[in-house]
Image (cartoon, rainbow, N blue to C red; front, side, top):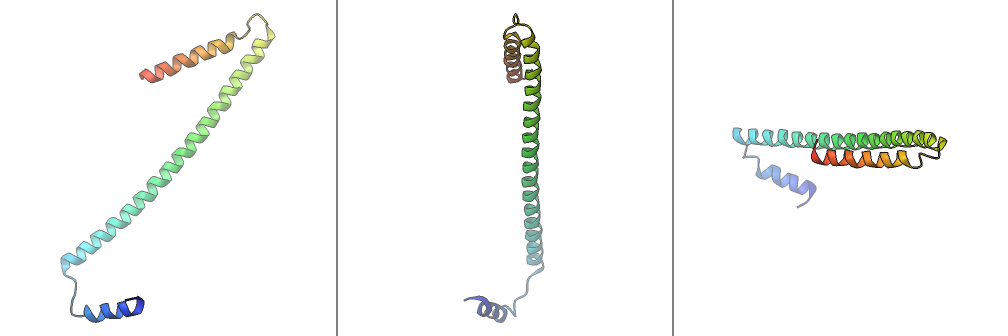
Length: 106
């Protein structure tokens, strides 16, 4: 059965049948639960998208800051030939130490 014929058949066969109070409450609860689940799903998706956006910009700013610090260090380093790659080596050591401390949870 399709469309109009199904609706008319249902209407004719269900005229004598009405929903009990418990059935009405159950349908109401199912409806509310479905709407609540839908709203929570949309909320979670929006929060995930916002978190990803913040993470992206945080990473971008961190890279920019790191680039600026490296640039300034290279400017200072190039003034004196004796220092060589000292600042880069120290930066690499500090990075290794920071990663290890983070891994240990310190």
